Length: 191
Length: 409
Image 1 (tube, rainbow over the protein chains, first blue to last red):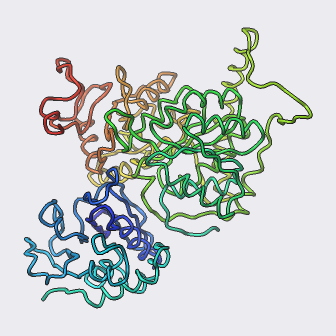
Image 2: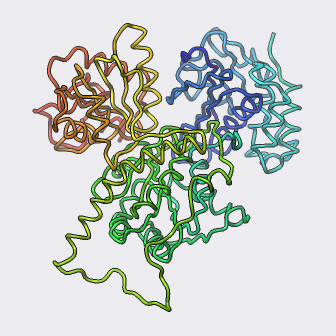
Image 3: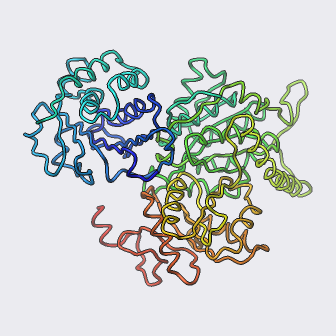
């Protein structure tokens, strides 16, 4: 299998937001539906608030010919902190037509993301706070934004995502499921 | 046939220790190894693993505790990385000299300074001459399975063994694997039978002074028994396939039969090398791969058989020995010097300090290989601002180039 026949995802966040767990949950969701997956954090030395990148690869069953390298040409992006859109090279290498799913209460067009991309937003921070995930200053937005991401991209189904949360998120599992489901409904996919 | 799960390499290694029914674990946490012993401590605390978990204040003490426990007859495990393995070095000698089949997983990490937590094999290969069995895992399945495979062989020859698994690229990558059923592993790996019982009713002395009359013979037996470990490793690898469904061998050839050019690699980067071989084959280049799984005992016969007489061999080293070359390149050249048909061996160093080894990095190295007309001892791939090539004889003496120093300062 050539690298361009698998779906490659890149997740941008800040330490404490749950980007690494998000990559694992997404991989688990696809794994639970029999697909071949890989997830991988681009670790620095972990610090709260510092930019964090994580990766996931998803392929069809039987396509187990995986590479081990950073994803430079992702099919889609998740952005857990909207300030990263202007402060880090988040869009670097994103394939034309790919989805950029951003944690933001604003409508997608207002983010003025340059390039030939599809943009979706969801108020993942607000949803996380309502479900008691993290604090108002430091909401844990990973499960919420995953709900919006699967709605926008269809990479995995919502029920697979919820099962993956059961498997991978041992703390506040019910709240995380509810946050993902609410974000799935509330995602703004633009026009 | 086991349970299909999605785990990181580190958690897979912990399952390898659990399935081996280790009885004593002693370890000190260090990034990127920590989640191996975290997982094991949770297994012990929850009762899923009946073992004693000894927390200690350093890696040196961790191996000392393993030596004591193994001398008392326990199957003993630890895990470490980089500086931790270096600190353990003295006790690694002790474990092997005392003929105690301890097994450890080492998450290979670049040595400091500069302080680095990223992937490189030099920490592991610096233990080359200690006398442990040494294997390189490529994927999450092997991070689990090689622990089990090593116990099987180590306890037959009473020599310890270590598994290398690349920092992050393997340790923190989640992939599907089969976590074996306990009864199948039990069928493969019998309980540990120590050479001597540590029994107060029958006191013995251990580790005393050995004068010039006996030390040489002890080391000679160690060497002889390591030679015996070669065929046992191959046999136990075949049996792993029969009993547990994954056959292993000291080397893994790939698209090699008609290859004019053969790449040699070890560890997780091999996945990308294999991919590059497929891409290069599509371009009509007759290239193949020999992956080294075992580093000690060294697979001399296989290396001579698969590499002797090729037009060119390129050894890809994620490590280096300053003043010589990449460490695998040295070993391959030495093995080929003893009666194999002549082959030119080109040494390539790449991926130092976790620098991404991409499929295209390997393709570039092969393009460089095809263009050269005489073998080079050590060619550096991916140094910023430099093409693939040997070191510059006139380079200024300083730790970093001026522009690099300014950029990072």
